[in-house]
Length: 609
Image (cartoon, rainbow, N blue to C red; front, side):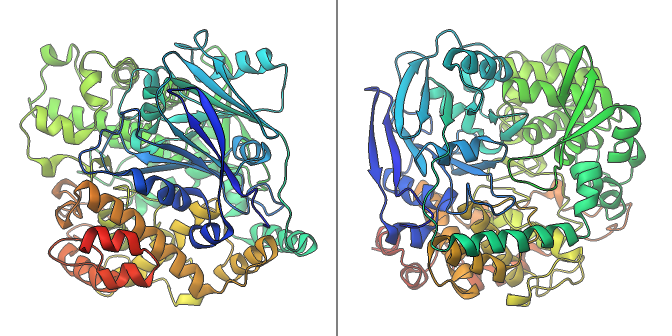
């Protein structure tokens, strides 16, 4: 087939055996790849009450059809399983070089079950596979492991996805790190990898699938490069990375500050400009990316180079905690990358701890320290405790919902949805984000339908998704649902969310790569199928409409900023969203007719009989 190798690697770590797992073209056409194909592969193993960390709980790494092509911004992979943090569907994506190496190894992805009786790592190289001892790597950080494995294998052209100490200790917010500070950060999938005693997945090779129209792909790649070059934010991303958005976000009340209770703060201290003014900063780009939004901070804290913090990380360890000391933000970020922790989850949990300390719910005796607003040293120390899963950090590592329960607080005070912490885009600032958060398949997610980009001027003319009033809820949900489906497809292809390519361009690229005639409506239908399949998985696990909600701490009107006095009308938007999706209002389950229409007959039979 075109665009695919046509096979996954099936790994049983209990028996330390591997085998090829063929995937038919019909399955690829239906589920594309990435996180959606992972959901299809994981679905048969899903059972209510299942333990995400049990040996039979699957872990899937997956690429897509456009990975390892000349199309720019496609060096991404998805990793998926049942989230150790939330107990619901879990997925994360990351860029760097590893995605190209994974696909170049001769496989479209890896399906992993079982638990090794000792630490191991998986090595794929041009179709050959070995499971190798990793006892000497256990306890070492993600950067050490990359160097040690490269020396051990005598290769430099390697891609590696690795867990740090946090994953080994089964910290529920553990990330999977790869390359230079890239992370599949959300949902705690590093803990799932650690539960299998799997320290790393190492890939090498440049095995490229046949393309349906190689000349056409190269032509479309040139057109894509031109589109990216002409896009108005490309230069800003190149100069300032994702921190380019900081000051605009504060003006729009989009940066949650002081644990979602404020929106005005001295933003000039935490912008991309401030980072460049204070430090020597260089760019970092994923393979095949013409932008280079990643940052490297040179000569920091005794290190020749450390990863510069992204927007989400800076805001989480910064304004959310009322901390404006860039040194401590960079240090906290580097600790998370070194030892494998989701920076969003860590920042939100620390901010909640500061909130609870101020209210007297957490005492100095209980925490073993004072946890005051703006204390950068305390933030770094708490990150270290989260990584080690010790002291108060053991509780913070379980997320804000667990913290609220531990201290007998109202769960509406926990800044999470479906157990996953809310990112650094305030739902009061963009009502389309509020409904995307509430209904997202993995919980609060700013990437599964980043509707704030629509309200800031992006458009999807193929479906008449156009900018509107960001502070109104009326008529918002249907377009937010459509955009959610389109962006879910990005994690199937797999394509960077910052790619400015149009739906029409994606259809042309898909045809040149696979030979399939794909139109915009089919793109939308495939995204709908993805959202509904993941919804069905969550429903089987026990999810109902009750979980589709934004907590009050993130909805109560603020008294300052451009969103002052305004709150999203969640009931209005949820009813509109459910009507568009054809989900049952009482149960939160997709209708049988909708599931069958999308070709999801088996979930339809399981959920409806």
